[in-house]
Image (cartoon, rainbow, N blue to C red; front, side):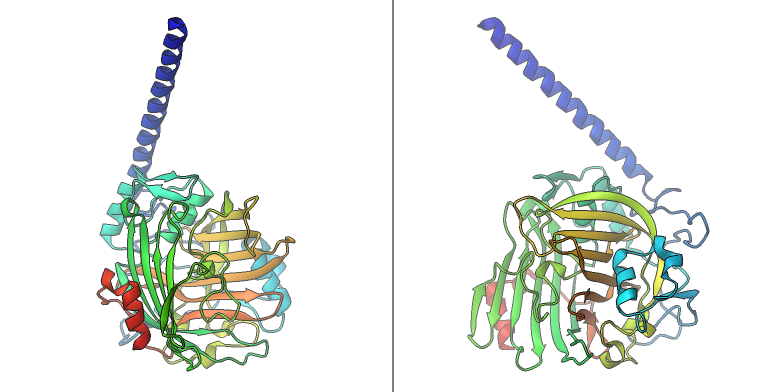
Length: 449
């Protein structure tokens, strides 16, 4: 008996030593990888610093840090003088198929006379404050997945995996990417009918980004509908948890008609998005948000792809929303696509889980880990919805984000576009985010404004 016990103890000791050795090796490997960030091969965010093989994708040189010399208010287009290198249409897409997503091809087929992809010279404008680069480098040596990828530990604030090895790590990079400490914005959301008719919805949105694994928090979000009158006064509050398997997202809604605050567990996964008229799920805002637990995420690899980039035309305050909205899709006169390297991740619904999207194929911009494009498939394997994030670099605050988000429904011919600032106050980056602004009590006050 004693011999058996001793053997078990030795076995346990061996296992412990082996585990410790593996952990030490992993930690050393992570630290070595972190040292590559900001060097000759990798940018401080982990992207390939060098130019593409054919020179179409330039080397990264630090990003866009100032706007055009004549800009006064808003965000002037630093590339206003450029013309498309070529335009991809329903007639020539086969020549460019290798650099297109399936969703882009289906949009060209569905709207052969109106949808097109104007391809401009590539500019790697994404850049961040030095403090972000310093934090990302620190995270690279310590961040780790927990709870089967449903949580992250050992990191602070932003981008835990600048040298990603798995699909779910890229999802986390998107969810935790830097967007400043907080912001307030007034934006327009539109869900046009198939003929292009629409009623604009005006939203006031407040953000506070507080990614902290120790307190299991990711961000706070307050969204108030201010127009049209039939929706005005509806307010949504989200206190986003990081590990939502450990603690689900906390959400409340204030209903102006009932004058009361209610918990809103439906504001998650495939629950309906606010004022989206059924055209977006809750986890479709920001192209994707929320817990990754319902999908098995597979890292497919990296490729060159035409994605919306430097979409400053969509920020033009000389345009109105009327200039942007068209039947079936936004006006391609005001879109811009560039050739960039993207990470490709495939999310497949896990057995026993439910979601209206059985599969999502995601394309992440290598310089930001921000989603540029997502193809959504239904339960029969058919491509259903196509999402695009129209990236811009907000140079004055060094924040890459979206000028607009679009989701096109290939089945019903409708779409949603959100985040437009042409007819609104736009962004307030000086917003002083306070936790007291993001409580159920504050929700009632916001609804009464």
